[in-house]
Amino acid sequence: MNKKIRYFLLAVMAAFMVGTVTAQSQTWREIHKVKKKETIFGIARQYGLTIQELVDANPEMNKPGYELKKDSYIMIPYAKGNKVETQTPQPQLQPVASEVKQPTAKKSSNAIRMGIMLPLHDINGDGRRMVEYYRGVLMACDSLRKQGYDIDVHAWNTPDNEDIAPVLRDKAASQCDFIIGPLYSKQMAQLSEFVTQNDIRLIIPFSINAPQLMTNRNIFQVYQSANNFNELVIEQFLKRFEGCHPVFVDCNDSTSTKGIFTFGLRRQLEMKGIAYDITNLKSSEANFAKSFSKTQTNIVILNTGRSPELNVAIAKLNGLTATNPGLKITLFGYTDWLMYTKQQLDNFYKYNTYIPSAFYYNALTSKTLRIEQKYRWNFHQDMMQSLPRFALTGFDHAMFFLQGFRKYGKDFTGAVGSLNYEPVQTPLKFERIGNGGLRNRFLQFIHYLPEQRVEAILF
Image (cartoon, rainbow, N blue to C red; front, side, top):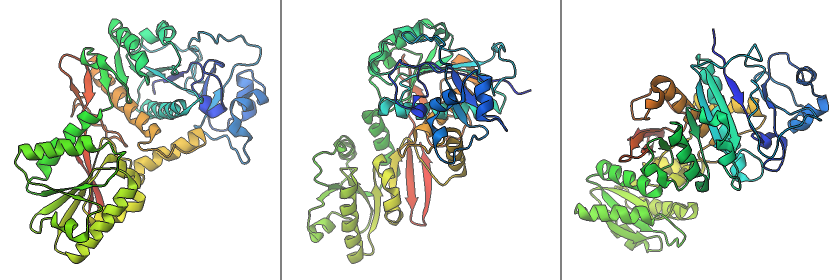
């Protein structure tokens, strides 16, 4: 018998689907997963709503050609006239009708209890991005339900200007096995103390200042700071390109922040006694060519991740290789370059390019295509055109931690080899920081080979 999964929402989690609202102006009753042969009329009657109330909560229903599709999600509002607490909202503990047979089914003691504390609204970009991330989390829950998982999800809207204390007073919060959040540093101190008091694990999914990581063993930090990431990249660069000739290209970009990497790499090369050359995009063809070795493979490193300078650099390399056909050249880039793959793919192949990254969005894999298609079916729109994709990030995070907590309980550390989950986009590998929490240390080089294929080299 399949175990049951129940989704609980609070405040304006799904405001992104229903229009602009203030952070605490509405409370949605729940999300309904559409079953086969259900109709708008039938769903409205099931929840004691008028058709117009249901349509108002789901504006996409007004679009020409809209169809109610099986397994899609729609918002269920409270019927007009029902009194709803909006100042200090409490979670609505009503299961999604399509997920359980008995409306009053008891929660399994074996359920994994996951909390989400993120800005889930349509007020600004933060909210819209986090709603998409949360949708990915829900899709992961749905996938694991089919494997027999029992999962309770509680979600709270915690916008930038909100005091998180009322959320933490909610009894459901203290019963979570782990919480994903927050997005804002100002909420970290209270949340860090809360998870310590209640023996809850806290997963920080994105970039925030979280000094509590150094002392709180209950914290997982997914995001890697630029310093930490660059240290990993430099370490692996030195191992992989031993015996090669580094060529640093000054791109005259005063806005670049890549100096933290190029200076760090140059220091390490100097400490190891490895010779390198520096040239400039404005150098003459003759002077540019002098920086390249005719006997070693040349590893070319720009000091910017911007597209215009990359275009100029490739033009210079094209001219160089045309007049010096025997030169061996490899480009070493930045995660930013993944955004230029469509325009630069042939050049990446030509110059045997390596791009360090903590993620890899491959739009052509069957797994990616399947999840993107399900996202369109469920939410009637495409994912945002961002790198990484927020919904895929949420999907990977939820799959990783839900499987980890099911297998190891609160002893889960996210160490390499502890799970056999193959991520869609966002691999994770955690290491303990002294006596504090766990930090993600995953790194891969995305390698574009001259035979026109791509490989991910994991470290």
